[in-house]
Picture 1 (cartoon, rainbow, N blue to C red):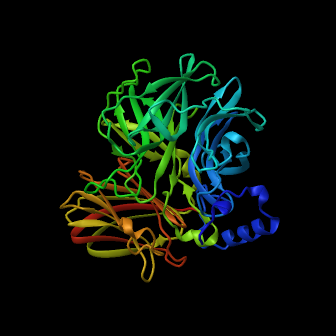
Picture 2 (picture 1 turned 120 degrees about the vertical axis):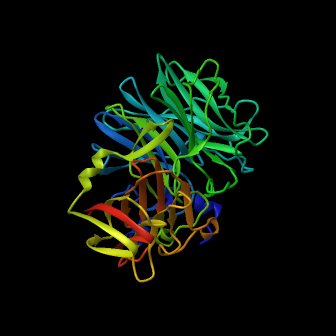
Picture 3 (picture 1 turned 45 degrees about the vertical axis):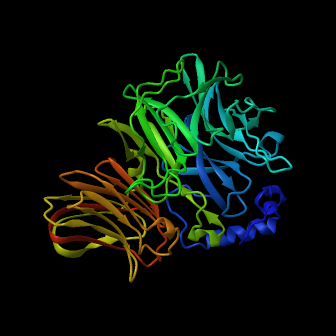
Length: 490
């Protein structure tokens, strides 16, 4: 379907009850609806926003266009949880109906202040010539959950030297001051991040650009996030316009991080190492982190990418969010592990210990449409080894380790309904290790694979037939020792 501008910017309250009901029916007929991931009731979900802990609950908002699987007029949708596992839909949080967000409530973040939760976001507008003018705005949620937008933006002007690509504020507090970084594009069409400060979340001062040694690294830096761990400063962002380089940067847009010294907000100079991708899979973008009451840094990402058609589109919806991940530093590298609360999802447990030699092996009880699985491969003499997930008559998703190249490989060539094939069907990354541990979460239409306790992560959507439920372990040209445990997730 080719969507017109009018259809893309149609408000939810302009849609008839019959239209919404028919869309809901179509969505619920989809064979690829997820079981334990956050997904939209209808339409399109994208960036996670406002990830926070407030009044005893985790709050996660996301970009939402309710009327179809396209990037149309964006709302903020609100979901909340007491345990990061079971999420309750709380409805629309921010509706784009003011002059400063007339063409969408774009991405942003949240922070508690004066007993309320302050949501800072980009209001997207277009003039009669379709020229964009962004505003940085505030909505305030009180303890009872009521959200009220401020009646004017808190940042109304784009600083001189930067274009209208100026969005996605991420806010934090240090001492008595609030700070926000905003993704931006310089006038020469290169990407960067700008720093603002405020004493009260209302009055914001432009401090300047955060200086990195990545002066020419893509044309726009979206969804920036800054935090500190182990006395290190970490800047996460999603740069657009990075060309592929060997096994890196294979997706249409990338997400990653740089680690350095703690940011000196007065000097704005960030001394850092090289840019590293956060996720090596096919479908991961625009991540956001929060600090929880236990001192954990927790990340959620959009399990999808812009400008790609997905098989669920035909059913009137698109995308979901990743499982929450705890972020830590190991050997000056960010490590992501599934939050421990996800163990609550575990059902029936099956274990196996065996040796796989020159072939593939199916194991009784190892099958399913939705499950958690941990497989440890040791004493490997095989040229390559791994496992095939969601195996059917002509379908399988392969995750393996190649001993000769020391590479992890995810292959979704035969994962089911094909899509985005022009960006390739294989993803790889280099990993030197004596043993290989795959910790896998398989939902109806996704896989999240944590390798060697989060040293690398591969996140991908897959769209197999419902009957493709097999699991096979394999070794090629040699043998490998396998220890595996699987939990049903329903």
